Length: 417
Image (cartoon, rainbow, N blue to C red; front, side):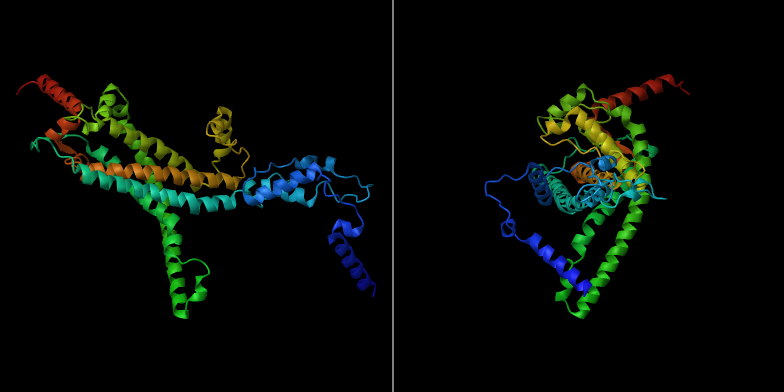
C-alpha cells in the first residue's frame, strides 16, 4: 500500500507540473517577457533542429563544478555538471572520458557532422558531380559536331620525329591507367547503392521470389563494392608514384612563358589562320599538366589521410589559416570551424577528396578527347612516341626548331667516317 501511495503522489505531482501555470494559481500575464536566457536557449534549439543555427561551441567542462549549485541549496547538486553538460561534452569530444586504446577518436561518443556529411555526400556531391561530368561530355560532343576533327593542314609528311621517350610514355600511361581505375571505382563506390539497389522498405510490395532476387542483387553489389575498395586503395600507390615521375619528367617544359599568351590569344589555333607557335608543351597542355599535378597532389594527400584513418588530420589547421586570411568573409561565409572531432576530420577529407576528383575527371575527359578523336596525329605521341613532322610543325613549331638545331649541332660535332 505504501508503494501504491507513493506512485499516486508522484503521478499527481507530474500532472500538476504539466498543467498550465494559471491552473495552479500562478499569474502569467500575456505581456510578461520571457527571460533572456530561456529565450536564447529556445531559439538556439529551434535553429539547430532546423539546421540553420550556428554550431554550438563546447562549454568549459572543467569549470562546471565552480558553476554548480551548492549542496546546501534547496535542490542541491549531484556533481560538477548536469546531464546536459555531460552529453554536450561528449558531443564535442571535450569530456574527461579516458580510453585504454584507440586514441582520441575512441573518446568520441557522438559528433556533430555525421548526418550533415552523409546528406551532403549522397545529395549535392553526387548530384552536381555527376552533372559536371555529363556537362563536359556534352560540350565535347557539341564541339566535335561544330568543329569536327582537327586535321593536319598539309596532310601527313611521312617523316617522323621523336616526341616522348619510352620512360616518359611509361610514366604517362601508369598515371593515366591508374587514374581511370581510381575514377571508375570511386564513382562506383559513390553511386552503386543508389543506382543498383532498390530503396529501403520496398520489399513490402514484392513477392517472395522478387525479395530473394533483390537480396541476391544486394549481396552482389556489396561484394563488388568490397572489390572496388580494394582496387581503389591499392592502385592509389601507382597513381602517386606516376604523379612524381611525370612531374620530374616535364616540369621544366611547363613553366609559363610569353609564347603561351599568344597561344591563348588565338585559342590554340581556333581563332584566326594557322597555329600559334609553341614549345614542347603549349598553353593548353600546361594547364592540363598543372591541373594534374596540383589536383592530383591534393587527391593524394587526402587519400593518404583516408588510407591511414585519424593519423593525418589537416582540416582544423587549414581552417585556422583560412580564417586568419579572411577567406570566409570574402566568400560571404561564417568562419570555418577550427575545433573538429577526429571523425569530422575524416569526413572533410573524404568530401574534399571526392570534389577535387570530380574536377580532375572533367579535365581529363577533355584531355582524352583532344588526344584521341579530337586531333589527328595527337595519339601517336603517346603511342610509339613519334609524331608526324608536319603535325609537330603545326602545333609545336618552336620545339621542332630546337630539336632540329640540336640534331644539326650534334651532326656537325660528330667527325665524318
